[in-house]
Length: 182
Image (cartoon, rainbow, N blue to C red; front, side, top):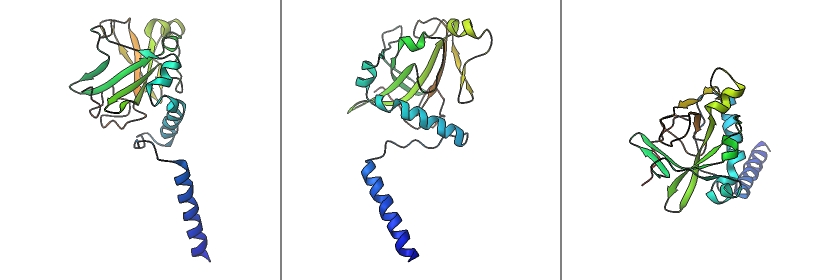
């Protein structure tokens, strides 16, 4: 009897997996425990509609180019990809885990696909409400990009989260050696 019950449970579970469709690209569980894993899962849930750039553009995200006109950002350390940025979110002076200011796409032969999100807040906007310290999410402090940054923007705080593609350099590292603009 136990064997039949176990077999029925396995068959039912397989049926549910089949009904759910193919799984998204897997991203290993982040270091930092179950709380961080849960937070990343929430970010993935809230950004799933933007797996491709069309819906992101419809939601107010627009292409960001650096000061040299380059849209796909890479470096010998790895790539970031193509950034679509929501200017209203960047300029609001806040950071919210489920509402990233930027969506980062990797160009592939099948089009661009979401690989990361980036949280961005201008330093002046942050300082207007927080005279000291840096923004933090997921237990991590944001990095400061100074006025001489490649985008020609005023100083800003930023934090990448590779929620959609594994980054062997780290979940929050700016550069992903597995992302290329070529």
